Image (cartoon, rainbow, N blue to C red; front, side, top):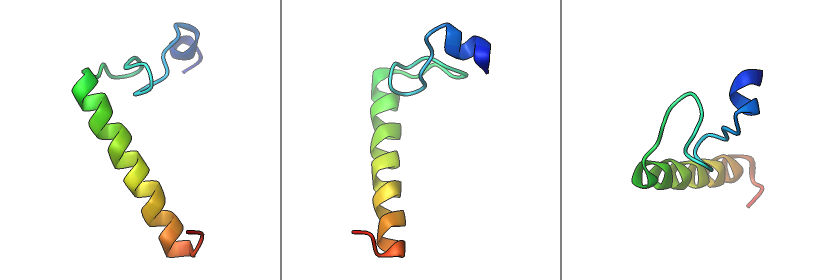
Length: 47
């Protein structure tokens, strides 16, 4: 993990990491993450 981070990998934010993402796939994952976090907040009454 440390080696991956040292190479500048940041996952979907820069499309590098354990997996390579196309710009389109990265955008889909980002949107899915946003929706997930809002769903979790709703469950706990934070929104």
